[in-house]
Amino acid sequence: SQTAEKETPTNPTNSEEGKNDENKQEIVSLEDYIKHPLQNRWALWFFKNDKSKTWQANLRLISKFDTVEDFWALYNHIQLSSNLISGCDYSLFKVSHDIALQHDKQAGRPLADHPVQTLQNLYCLLCLVGEAFDDHSDDVCGAVVNIRTKGDKIAIWTTDYENKDAVIHIGRVYKERLGVPPKVIIGYQSHGDTATKSGSTTKNKFVV
Image (cartoon, rainbow, N blue to C red; front, side, top):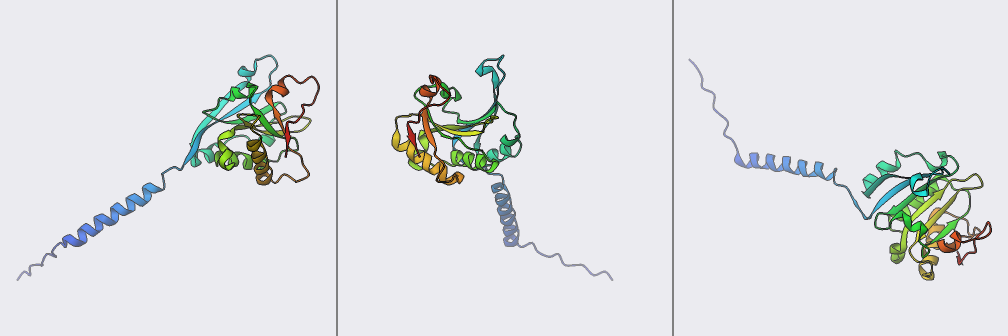
């Protein structure tokens, strides 16, 4: 004789729970791909000094980014500034502030004139994209690292050289975050003074 096997009834509750678990897993996996937006969109530029070309012709846009993940993806794939040859610059500017601002006489820059270390370059970038300057972050346009035979330099560019409160605060945060020794003086210069200087040095408007 043949024995009929009983079919196991389907439990609709268990089936729905299984689907819910799958949906939860899908949601969790999607969260892994959500990027974290930055407050501003940034552009990284590379400058190589070829005296046969104009300043604009020597400037090349590397990339733009506006998320934490895209920042790190870019940073991990570019040549470190310590490996650049003399005469080259890296510039990181807010897209809302054209890099041509460097030629705006109203602009200014706290200038760190000392040997630049790779880690300091990274901390400077993190200060920019992380809006580390508190209420004065909006006064920051970007930063430039100059690779030169006589000594590398980092300069943070601001919108208005006459805004002393912003300049002093930015300079203090800059020194603290980059680990600049207290005895090292950071001078703040206006671009107008730098462009019209007659000697090898430019007088500082403020010092930190």
